[in-house]
Image 1 (cartoon, rainbow, N blue to C red):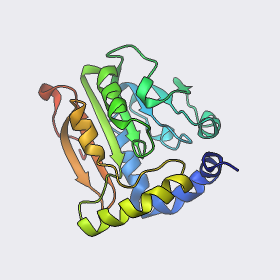
Image 2 (cartoon, helix red, strand yellow; image 1 turned 120 degrees about the vertical axis):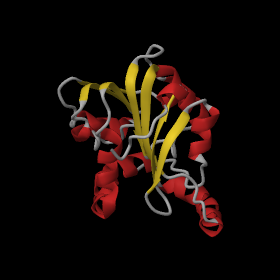
Image 3 (tube, rainbow, N blue to C red; image 1 turned 135 degrees about the vertical axis):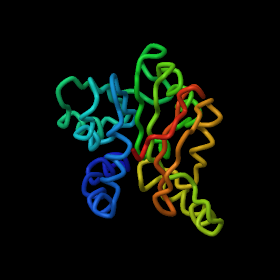
Image 4 (cartoon, rainbow, N blue to C red; image 1 turned 90 degrees about the vertical axis):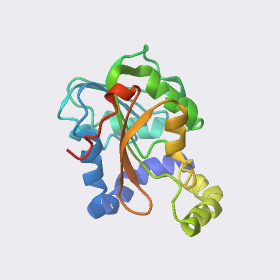
Length: 204
């Protein structure tokens, strides 16, 4: 069994304890403000689909065929699922009012390119909501994550524990207007492609 098939098979079960400890609330936090035409990148098994109540329609991408098969069973009305990598989103410029990612940028092959794609497909007044696990701020935890990453990414379908994910967003030109640190590992945040629309509101 490949690592990706293994992760896809167990992903929902592995997320149950995480959701009970608060990650389900995080999902709601980053999806409840998703409005209009929404894109979710790296949809995984589709666990977020049920939370997009404020969206007019949801488009989702996922590169892993094993994850994709699970996500397809969770599609709702006015939603579409496409196999695609985040570095090459198959959508025109300025297509979406909202882009969402949860636990996605840890596995992307070229996270900076993916962040640039997020900016490209966002409308000028669009918002990017995310929940990710960037490298820890505490030096001792960051060192442990760097040591563990070579083995962890093999076991966890390519997940990197030691990425400075927020720096990719900033380097792509996305303007982060709000960050909520959830614990030592996870952050939720909101970003825009224009300073004029970079306003807090994630926790509203």
